[in-house]
Picture 1 (cartoon, protein in one colour):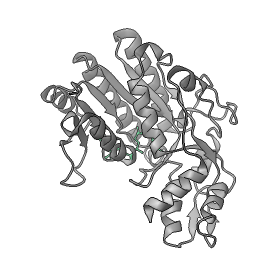
Picture 2 (cartoon, rainbow, N blue to C red; picture 1 turned 180 degrees about the horizontal axis):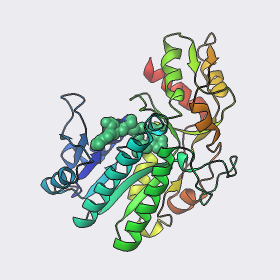
Picture 3 (spheres, rainbow, N blue to C red; picture 1 turned 90 degrees about the vertical axis):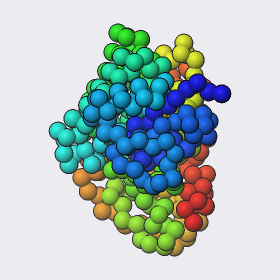
Length: 310
Ligand code: NAD
Protein backbone atom coordinates (compact mmCIF):
# COMPACT_ATOMS: atom_id res chain seq x y z
CA UNK A 1 0.00 0.00 0.00
CA UNK A 2 1.38 3.40 -1.00
CA UNK A 3 2.48 5.75 1.77
CA UNK A 4 2.30 8.72 -0.58
CA UNK A 5 -0.44 11.31 -0.23
CA UNK A 6 -0.46 13.59 -3.25
CA UNK A 7 -1.94 17.10 -3.43
CA UNK A 8 -2.80 18.49 -6.88
CA UNK A 9 -3.18 22.27 -6.94
CA UNK A 10 -5.20 23.57 -9.93
CA UNK A 11 -6.60 20.08 -10.54
CA UNK A 12 -9.64 21.13 -12.58
CA UNK A 13 -7.76 22.58 -15.55
CA UNK A 14 -6.85 21.02 -18.89
CA UNK A 15 -3.95 19.02 -17.50
CA UNK A 16 -5.09 18.54 -13.93
CA UNK A 17 -8.30 16.79 -15.00
CA UNK A 18 -6.35 14.01 -16.71
CA UNK A 19 -3.35 13.92 -14.38
CA UNK A 20 -5.64 13.54 -11.33
CA UNK A 21 -7.32 10.48 -12.83
CA UNK A 22 -3.99 8.88 -13.70
CA UNK A 23 -2.54 9.48 -10.22
CA UNK A 24 -5.76 8.10 -8.65
CA UNK A 25 -5.33 4.95 -10.75
CA UNK A 26 -1.71 4.53 -9.67
CA UNK A 27 -1.93 5.49 -5.98
CA UNK A 28 -5.62 4.89 -5.16
CA UNK A 29 -8.33 7.55 -4.65
CA UNK A 30 -7.63 7.95 -0.94
CA UNK A 31 -3.99 8.88 -1.71
CA UNK A 32 -4.80 11.75 -4.07
CA UNK A 33 -6.28 15.06 -2.89
CA UNK A 34 -7.45 17.26 -5.76
CA UNK A 35 -7.92 21.00 -5.24
CA UNK A 36 -8.91 24.08 -7.21
CA UNK A 37 -10.72 27.39 -6.74
CA UNK A 38 -14.12 25.77 -7.38
CA UNK A 39 -15.58 22.30 -7.37
CA UNK A 40 -16.36 21.01 -10.88
CA UNK A 41 -18.81 18.23 -10.07
CA UNK A 42 -19.97 16.19 -7.11
CA UNK A 43 -18.31 12.98 -8.25
CA UNK A 44 -14.74 14.21 -7.65
CA UNK A 45 -13.25 12.05 -4.90
CA UNK A 46 -11.28 13.86 -2.17
CA UNK A 47 -11.73 17.33 -3.66
CA UNK A 48 -10.88 20.39 -1.55
CA UNK A 49 -11.66 23.98 -2.46
CA UNK A 50 -8.31 25.76 -2.20
CA UNK A 51 -7.06 29.18 -3.26
CA UNK A 52 -3.30 28.66 -3.58
CA UNK A 53 -2.62 32.40 -3.12
CA UNK A 54 -3.60 31.84 0.54
CA UNK A 55 -0.51 30.52 2.35
CA UNK A 56 -2.41 29.43 5.46
CA UNK A 57 -5.00 27.54 3.43
CA UNK A 58 -2.28 25.63 1.53
CA UNK A 59 -0.48 24.85 4.79
CA UNK A 60 -3.70 23.62 6.46
CA UNK A 61 -4.48 21.23 3.58
CA UNK A 62 -0.91 19.87 3.65
CA UNK A 63 -0.92 19.30 7.41
CA UNK A 64 -4.46 17.93 7.72
CA UNK A 65 -3.95 15.42 4.94
CA UNK A 66 -0.32 14.50 5.72
CA UNK A 67 0.67 15.38 2.15
CA UNK A 68 3.98 13.93 0.88
CA UNK A 69 3.99 15.20 -2.75
CA UNK A 70 2.56 18.28 -4.46
CA UNK A 71 1.79 18.83 -8.16
CA UNK A 72 1.42 22.60 -8.57
CA UNK A 73 -0.56 23.26 -11.76
CA UNK A 74 -2.37 26.53 -10.97
CA UNK A 75 -1.41 29.38 -13.28
CA UNK A 76 -2.74 31.97 -15.72
CA UNK A 77 -1.57 30.93 -19.20
CA UNK A 78 0.16 32.82 -22.04
CA UNK A 79 -2.66 34.38 -24.08
CA UNK A 80 -4.98 35.07 -21.15
CA UNK A 81 -2.02 36.45 -19.17
CA UNK A 82 -1.36 39.21 -21.70
CA UNK A 83 -4.77 40.68 -20.92
CA UNK A 84 -3.71 41.39 -17.35
CA UNK A 85 0.08 41.19 -16.98
CA UNK A 86 0.43 42.31 -13.34
CA UNK A 87 -2.34 40.01 -12.06
CA UNK A 88 -0.75 37.13 -14.00
CA UNK A 89 2.67 37.74 -12.48
CA UNK A 90 1.13 38.06 -9.04
CA UNK A 91 -0.94 34.84 -9.23
CA UNK A 92 1.75 32.72 -10.91
CA UNK A 93 4.46 33.78 -8.45
CA UNK A 94 2.37 33.90 -5.26
CA UNK A 95 0.97 30.40 -5.72
CA UNK A 96 4.45 29.03 -6.47
CA UNK A 97 6.01 30.74 -3.42
CA UNK A 98 3.27 29.32 -1.19
CA UNK A 99 3.80 25.80 -2.51
CA UNK A 100 7.60 26.05 -2.19
CA UNK A 101 7.53 27.52 1.32
CA UNK A 102 4.95 25.06 2.66
CA UNK A 103 6.97 22.25 1.06
CA UNK A 104 10.20 23.45 2.68
CA UNK A 105 8.65 23.98 6.12
CA UNK A 106 6.80 20.66 6.17
CA UNK A 107 9.40 18.54 4.41
CA UNK A 108 7.38 17.56 1.36
CA UNK A 109 9.34 14.85 -0.44
CA UNK A 110 8.70 15.82 -4.06
CA UNK A 111 7.14 18.79 -5.85
CA UNK A 112 6.20 19.11 -9.53
CA UNK A 113 6.17 22.53 -11.23
CA UNK A 114 5.27 22.80 -14.93
CA UNK A 115 7.25 25.28 -16.97
CA UNK A 116 6.60 25.99 -20.65
CA UNK A 117 8.13 26.60 -24.07
CA UNK A 118 7.02 30.20 -23.36
CA UNK A 119 10.33 30.65 -21.47
CA UNK A 120 12.06 31.10 -24.85
CA UNK A 121 12.13 34.30 -26.89
CA UNK A 122 13.42 35.44 -30.27
CA UNK A 123 17.17 35.00 -29.83
CA UNK A 124 17.31 31.20 -30.02
CA UNK A 125 17.73 28.54 -32.69
CA UNK A 126 14.03 27.93 -33.32
CA UNK A 127 14.56 24.75 -35.36
CA UNK A 128 16.65 23.07 -32.66
CA UNK A 129 16.02 24.79 -29.34
CA UNK A 130 18.58 23.47 -26.88
CA UNK A 131 18.11 22.99 -23.13
CA UNK A 132 20.46 25.83 -22.25
CA UNK A 133 19.29 28.46 -24.74
CA UNK A 134 18.71 32.14 -23.94
CA UNK A 135 15.59 32.70 -21.89
CA UNK A 136 14.17 36.08 -22.88
CA UNK A 137 10.41 35.51 -23.00
CA UNK A 138 7.99 37.88 -24.72
CA UNK A 139 5.00 37.33 -22.40
CA UNK A 140 4.48 37.90 -18.69
CA UNK A 141 3.50 34.23 -18.47
CA UNK A 142 6.90 33.24 -19.92
CA UNK A 143 8.60 35.64 -17.49
CA UNK A 144 6.81 33.99 -14.57
CA UNK A 145 7.94 30.54 -15.78
CA UNK A 146 11.61 31.65 -16.13
CA UNK A 147 11.45 33.13 -12.62
CA UNK A 148 9.73 29.95 -11.40
CA UNK A 149 12.49 27.79 -12.89
CA UNK A 150 15.11 29.86 -11.06
CA UNK A 151 13.17 29.71 -7.79
CA UNK A 152 12.82 25.92 -7.88
CA UNK A 153 16.54 25.66 -8.66
CA UNK A 154 17.19 27.91 -5.63
CA UNK A 155 15.00 25.79 -3.32
CA UNK A 156 16.82 22.68 -4.50
CA UNK A 157 20.29 24.21 -4.03
CA UNK A 158 19.62 25.97 -0.73
CA UNK A 159 17.16 23.66 1.03
CA UNK A 160 17.46 20.37 -0.87
CA UNK A 161 13.77 20.49 -1.83
CA UNK A 162 13.25 17.91 -4.59
CA UNK A 163 11.31 19.99 -7.13
CA UNK A 164 11.10 18.62 -10.66
CA UNK A 165 9.91 20.38 -13.78
CA UNK A 166 9.13 20.05 -17.50
CA UNK A 167 8.87 22.76 -20.14
CA UNK A 168 5.57 21.59 -21.59
CA UNK A 169 4.82 22.31 -25.22
CA UNK A 170 1.19 22.92 -26.31
CA UNK A 171 -0.95 20.15 -24.84
CA UNK A 172 -3.65 18.40 -26.90
CA UNK A 173 -6.25 16.09 -25.40
CA UNK A 174 -9.93 15.21 -25.79
CA UNK A 175 -10.78 14.93 -22.07
CA UNK A 176 -10.66 18.63 -21.16
CA UNK A 177 -10.73 22.09 -22.72
CA UNK A 178 -7.67 24.35 -22.78
CA UNK A 179 -7.43 27.34 -20.45
CA UNK A 180 -6.18 30.32 -22.49
CA UNK A 181 -2.86 29.38 -24.11
CA UNK A 182 -1.41 30.23 -27.55
CA UNK A 183 -1.62 26.58 -28.68
CA UNK A 184 -5.34 26.15 -27.78
CA UNK A 185 -6.29 26.18 -31.49
CA UNK A 186 -4.90 22.64 -31.84
CA UNK A 187 -7.58 21.34 -29.44
CA UNK A 188 -10.45 23.53 -30.73
CA UNK A 189 -9.83 22.44 -34.33
CA UNK A 190 -10.84 18.84 -33.55
CA UNK A 191 -14.03 19.97 -31.77
CA UNK A 192 -15.07 21.88 -34.92
CA UNK A 193 -14.04 19.08 -37.31
CA UNK A 194 -16.30 16.46 -35.72
CA UNK A 195 -19.38 18.71 -36.00
CA UNK A 196 -18.52 19.64 -39.62
CA UNK A 197 -17.98 23.32 -38.84
CA UNK A 198 -15.47 25.58 -40.56
CA UNK A 199 -12.59 26.27 -38.18
CA UNK A 200 -11.34 29.84 -37.85
CA UNK A 201 -7.70 29.68 -36.81
CA UNK A 202 -6.10 32.51 -34.81
CA UNK A 203 -2.63 31.59 -36.13
CA UNK A 204 -1.30 31.76 -39.71
CA UNK A 205 -1.11 28.53 -41.78
CA UNK A 206 2.65 27.98 -41.50
CA UNK A 207 3.09 28.70 -37.77
CA UNK A 208 4.94 25.59 -36.59
CA UNK A 209 4.93 25.08 -32.82
CA UNK A 210 5.99 22.26 -30.47
CA UNK A 211 3.00 20.25 -29.23
CA UNK A 212 2.33 17.02 -27.35
CA UNK A 213 -0.56 14.61 -27.08
CA UNK A 214 -2.03 14.39 -23.55
CA UNK A 215 -1.06 10.73 -22.93
CA UNK A 216 2.58 11.59 -23.62
CA UNK A 217 2.36 14.67 -21.37
CA UNK A 218 0.97 12.68 -18.44
CA UNK A 219 3.45 9.83 -18.95
CA UNK A 220 6.39 12.27 -19.13
CA UNK A 221 5.25 13.95 -15.91
CA UNK A 222 4.95 10.68 -13.99
CA UNK A 223 8.17 9.23 -15.44
CA UNK A 224 10.06 12.35 -14.34
CA UNK A 225 8.53 12.23 -10.86
CA UNK A 226 9.36 8.53 -10.49
CA UNK A 227 12.92 8.74 -11.84
CA UNK A 228 15.72 8.11 -9.33
CA UNK A 229 16.84 11.38 -7.76
CA UNK A 230 20.45 10.92 -8.86
CA UNK A 231 19.35 10.81 -12.53
CA UNK A 232 17.87 14.32 -12.41
CA UNK A 233 20.64 16.58 -13.72
CA UNK A 234 18.41 19.52 -14.75
CA UNK A 235 17.13 21.36 -11.69
CA UNK A 236 15.55 24.24 -13.55
CA UNK A 237 13.20 22.56 -16.06
CA UNK A 238 13.64 19.90 -18.75
CA UNK A 239 13.01 20.52 -22.44
CA UNK A 240 10.65 17.83 -23.71
CA UNK A 241 9.46 17.33 -27.27
CA UNK A 242 6.52 15.54 -28.83
CA UNK A 243 5.32 16.63 -32.28
CA UNK A 244 5.95 19.90 -34.14
CA UNK A 245 3.34 20.97 -36.69
CA UNK A 246 1.58 24.00 -38.20
CA UNK A 247 -2.18 24.74 -38.53
CA UNK A 248 -1.92 23.78 -42.21
CA UNK A 249 -0.44 20.39 -41.30
CA UNK A 250 -2.96 19.54 -38.57
CA UNK A 251 -5.80 20.55 -40.94
CA UNK A 252 -4.34 18.20 -43.57
CA UNK A 253 -4.23 15.33 -41.06
CA UNK A 254 -7.92 15.99 -40.19
CA UNK A 255 -8.81 15.91 -43.91
CA UNK A 256 -7.73 12.27 -44.01
CA UNK A 257 -10.84 11.60 -41.87
CA UNK A 258 -13.07 14.50 -42.97
CA UNK A 259 -12.15 15.30 -46.61
CA UNK A 260 -14.56 18.29 -46.63
CA UNK A 261 -13.05 19.89 -43.52
CA UNK A 262 -12.39 23.61 -44.00
CA UNK A 263 -10.09 26.01 -42.17
CA UNK A 264 -9.96 29.83 -42.42
CA UNK A 265 -7.08 31.91 -41.11
CA UNK A 266 -7.59 35.05 -39.08
CA UNK A 267 -4.40 35.65 -37.04
CA UNK A 268 -4.82 37.84 -33.93
CA UNK A 269 -2.52 39.01 -31.09
CA UNK A 270 -1.54 35.39 -30.41
CA UNK A 271 0.41 35.29 -33.72
CA UNK A 272 3.14 37.52 -32.24
CA UNK A 273 3.43 35.24 -29.20
CA UNK A 274 3.66 32.12 -31.40
CA UNK A 275 6.27 33.80 -33.64
CA UNK A 276 8.51 34.33 -30.61
CA UNK A 277 8.42 30.64 -29.59
CA UNK A 278 10.54 27.69 -30.76
CA UNK A 279 9.41 25.42 -33.58
CA UNK A 280 11.36 22.29 -32.66
CA UNK A 281 12.61 21.49 -29.16
CA UNK A 282 15.80 19.53 -28.53
CA UNK A 283 15.07 17.27 -25.56
CA UNK A 284 18.31 15.27 -25.41
CA UNK A 285 18.78 15.83 -21.63
CA UNK A 286 15.36 14.30 -20.83
CA UNK A 287 16.09 11.38 -23.16
CA UNK A 288 19.48 10.80 -21.57
CA UNK A 289 18.57 11.30 -17.89
CA UNK A 290 15.23 9.45 -17.61
CA UNK A 291 14.78 7.79 -21.02
CA UNK A 292 12.08 10.15 -22.32
CA UNK A 293 10.55 9.10 -25.65
CA UNK A 294 7.21 10.35 -27.06
CA UNK A 295 4.77 7.76 -28.46
CA UNK A 296 2.31 9.90 -30.48
CA UNK A 297 2.93 11.40 -33.92
CA UNK A 298 0.48 13.71 -35.70
CA UNK A 299 -1.32 10.90 -37.50
CA UNK A 300 -1.88 8.80 -34.38
CA UNK A 301 -2.93 11.85 -32.37
CA UNK A 302 -5.54 12.90 -34.97
CA UNK A 303 -6.92 9.37 -35.16
CA UNK A 304 -7.17 9.15 -31.36
CA UNK A 305 -8.68 12.62 -30.91
CA UNK A 306 -11.37 12.05 -33.53
CA UNK A 307 -12.26 8.59 -32.24
CA UNK A 308 -12.69 9.85 -28.67
CA UNK A 309 -14.44 13.14 -29.43
CA UNK A 310 -16.98 11.36 -31.65
P1 NAD B 1 -5.67 25.56 -16.94
O1 NAD B 1 -5.80 27.04 -17.07
O2 NAD B 1 -6.54 24.69 -17.78
O3 NAD B 1 -5.84 25.13 -15.42
C1 NAD B 1 -5.28 25.85 -14.35
C2 NAD B 1 -6.15 25.61 -13.13
O4 NAD B 1 -5.61 26.38 -12.05
C3 NAD B 1 -7.62 26.05 -13.32
O5 NAD B 1 -8.50 24.98 -13.05
C4 NAD B 1 -7.77 27.20 -12.34
O6 NAD B 1 -9.07 27.26 -11.73
C5 NAD B 1 -6.71 26.87 -11.30
N1 NAD B 1 -6.31 28.03 -10.51
C6 NAD B 1 -6.13 29.31 -10.94
N2 NAD B 1 -5.84 30.10 -9.90
C7 NAD B 1 -5.82 29.31 -8.80
C8 NAD B 1 -5.58 29.56 -7.42
N3 NAD B 1 -5.32 30.79 -6.96
N4 NAD B 1 -5.63 28.51 -6.56
C9 NAD B 1 -5.92 27.25 -7.01
N5 NAD B 1 -6.16 26.98 -8.31
C10 NAD B 1 -6.12 27.99 -9.18
O7 NAD B 1 -4.12 25.21 -17.19
P2 NAD B 1 -3.52 23.83 -17.72
O8 NAD B 1 -3.50 23.89 -19.20
O9 NAD B 1 -4.13 22.69 -17.04
O10 NAD B 1 -2.01 24.01 -17.25
C11 NAD B 1 -1.51 23.46 -16.05
C12 NAD B 1 -0.08 23.92 -15.87
O11 NAD B 1 0.70 23.49 -17.00
C13 NAD B 1 0.08 25.44 -15.79
O12 NAD B 1 1.06 25.76 -14.85
C14 NAD B 1 0.54 25.81 -17.17
O13 NAD B 1 1.34 26.97 -17.14
C15 NAD B 1 1.35 24.60 -17.59
N6 NAD B 1 1.42 24.46 -19.04
C16 NAD B 1 0.30 24.13 -19.77
C17 NAD B 1 0.38 24.02 -21.15
C18 NAD B 1 -0.82 23.67 -21.99
O14 NAD B 1 -0.74 23.61 -23.22
N7 NAD B 1 -1.98 23.38 -21.40
C19 NAD B 1 1.61 24.24 -21.80
C20 NAD B 1 2.71 24.59 -21.04
C21 NAD B 1 2.62 24.68 -19.66
